[in-house]
Length: 96
Image (cartoon, rainbow, N blue to C red; front, side):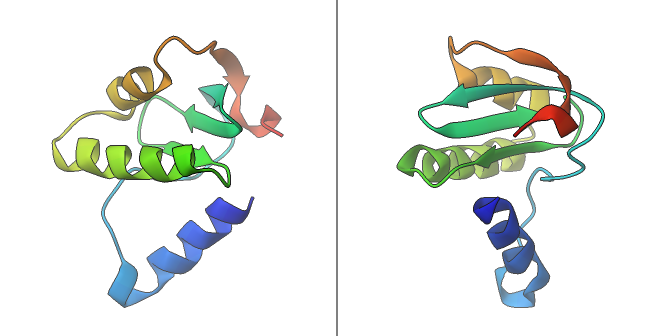
């Protein structure tokens, strides 16, 4: 998960630290959608992340940061970003 690793590196660097939704844990109950090669997932609490090497993933990151800053929840933001895409519910550890 290249983007997940990049997020960890960015968050560990003080000059790149950002406040946003968490990317982990990727275990426990959650929901996800595969949209244009990007996996968008949430635990409907504090985790919301887009994993993929696409322009869409970059768009999702920007939208997630704006939603977080505006006080939106992970659930609200996931539902907005996924649009009409199919949703899978299950344990987030099942995401491949």
